[in-house]
Image (cartoon, rainbow, N blue to C red; front, side, top):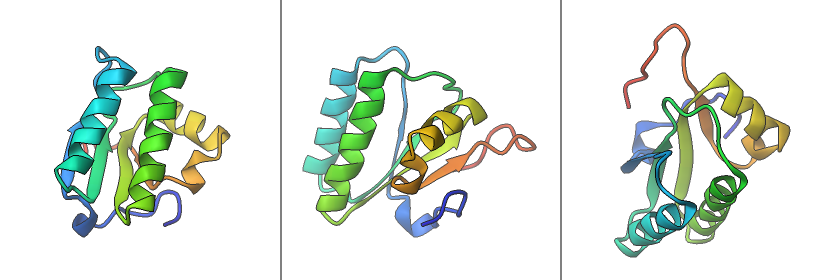
Length: 110
């Protein structure tokens, strides 16, 4: 899937909201629980997130890798321009399917 390509609805089985008040350990546990529950298509909603630390970034990358190894799909939606540029700078936009937040539509329906 190319950067900016729409993530089909069929790949949107489970949505989770990125929380700035949670630790990366909490995030890792939530991801592990989703895998244990058998979810194979997971979308992480990054709405209203403009900054991310390296531990959360690493957790996202590791979870994407684990989902891919298990034959699942993992993607990010509603990325701010700032956050998208960080992912792009690290070439993660080439590995993880992602959608930017549409500036003309402040909150994308997911």
